[in-house]
Length: 280
Image (cartoon, rainbow, N blue to C red; front, side, top):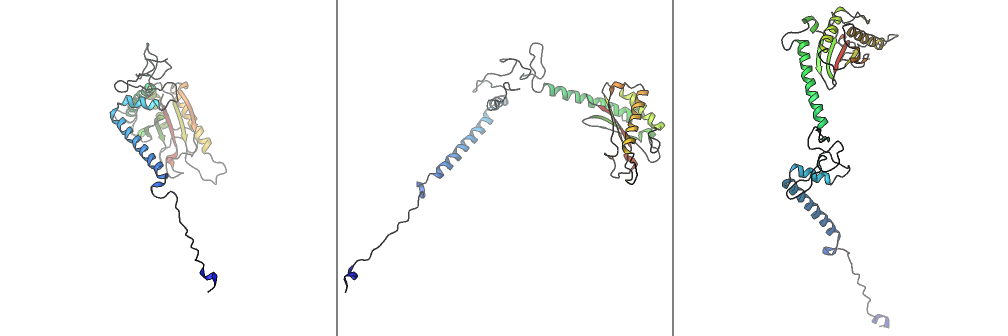
């Protein structure tokens, strides 16, 4: 046997080491800490919502939102919070907002956030009442009507954000203007005179809109723009002839066939006029 065969075999052990395994890693601790912090903030929020009044919650919200020098409606409160009120008529210089009341007084000129909003709502409600009375006068809802049944067939009224819209439209057998012209028919003169009398009950301004039906595209000259403009100008002149104040007419607009009332572009129903009693 040779000497080489007497040598012991060399054994190499390879130990596999995995880093961060088991509870020795630290990444999960960060995630768990974030979770606990979020839960604590959540339960704190729930407690605050339950343990505070509306005014106190508003004061807390204003504390975390200091983007303006004076918040319009704010305040800390008494009790556990013990904060000072920051209403502008009590502790700080008056700058027009931040009051505890909607409307200012002679002593306290600051105005609350909802002061102008409350006035706007009051004006809107008042206008709606006036518009309802005018509609009753026009359509006879409240008893007597200012128009005959024949005239009433041409009228539609509606109240929108813009104001009270009184719409006149053509009937197949009774148009408002001579065909394809801007010459008003007697029935239109009666309608405009009636609206002029009713609109004198209020000082609001007025707008007049004119619309026409569509015409075939094969025409060499499409008359829709000139026709709608001419007709709406005729209505303006009729109002003035009936004694309506010129300065109350805010605008006169011809829309051609751009805003049809009927799905059929060439329908006679699209020949119409709008006299709008505008909101303040």
